[in-house]
Image (tube, rainbow, N blue to C red; front, side, top):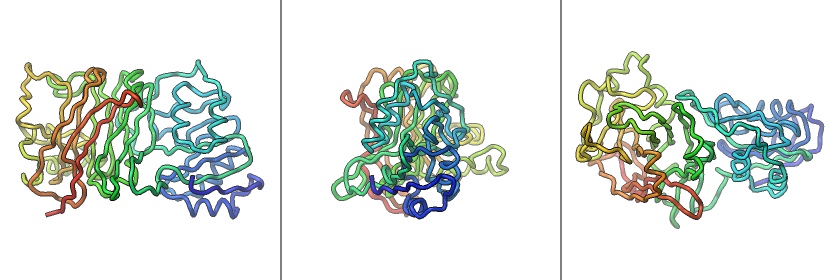
Length: 389
């Protein structure tokens, strides 16, 4: 925890020195824990109302002593609030505890009984999430504002994590590992073993922010898709599986990949110069506009993978993606059934001859299961600095 701000004043007036100091101190993407006995109006109007709209830094979860509610919940497809603060669901307690370091808050959360009547399956909506909720806690004590956690980490080496999200009966988070020289060596996502259970029967998508320590890599964010019925071409990729898009462009650019855009067909057909695409990868046959996927782009496959309908047995594969003349993503696709085998895989990534941007690019791809942490890691590693040319 970086800093604690404490005020014992009426909740009806949000214009107070400690509150102003907190709003000036907190950084975009940081976590604020609200320990308060005041009303919901104070948390909403006094904290969120004064935070810059574009940063959306402060998002309380516990608004008051009697209600647990996620603010802007409709922007989070996995939100299941509101809840009674008297009880937590079996899925919520580990999700919240993992993001809290304050001992008093942890004791409060651990003391709350599990609500067995709460629904276990999270709500997922396909392609309608473009923002992700931060995590902020409030409990029943005098108002204490604690800013820090997450993006406030100052360590120069180690593994750093992005925001935690619910998926299935478990959780998922992004991460980056830095070496002793503060250089990135690996980026990826970690999914708890329980995340493979309780998955919904409809398609779902999460936009996952990378931790700020990943800023020197070529990656901007991760899009995680759950496809319970597979996706076209179904003869190849019809099994239930996850798509993990590591994007090199921001989420706003991806959201503009829309058939309603009058330039959609032209942008799909505008392929990068071959030197910028990993060796051996080819675009789908036929007109690019027919193969382009809205909100994603054009998917390229490795010509040496032997992807032949009727013969290809999909377990895990690595694709690349482009849009409007840019190399935009690297995408592992992995079936749920294969993940449940808990096998490890590590492959060298085919490299392009040149690069469109400067940053650390991966040279390896891995999937592994950690029996101690009960987590799956899907990662891109062996980072090397490349320069635009």
